[in-house]
Length: 214
Image (tube, rainbow, N blue to C red):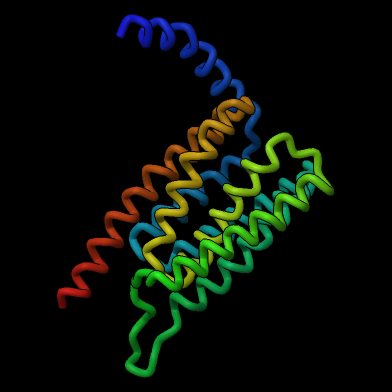
């Protein structure tokens, strides 16, 4: 316990100082994007259609910010998120012949294998792009987490409960990466995303089980 206390006392002032510096350096536009990103995950947890309008604001701001920052790979990913958000918005509001909205459901084994394959393919493509056309310092890590988030976005649009598992795994992985890179503010943002994703999985599971019982 004494060792952990010593480590805490040694590193906490530096972490807080870095966080304070990040907050001061954050533009108002980036702050707006962060707020809308958190709102989007909150609405997703509630299975509320506002997940997509708020999410679209978030990704469009990041497309703009990444373009002028020269982060073209991140800009491309956020542009993809925009397309997926539009599709998700349409799919969540769509009704079947009985006028029912798309329900929460889960993947079967065949679908799990398919999406695992798709994540692997996405990883390969993104990794190739990063090592060939960017100066990414963490191409393997970045490729894997981005692949998880892409699959998570797609599964959320389909209202598959497993989307939360991919978001949780991705969030757990990127939190230390951002912290190591000195992006403490972004790291804390993803801690909030992680908490909301866990809550979202629990809430969606309850709704899925209640529908199966009914």
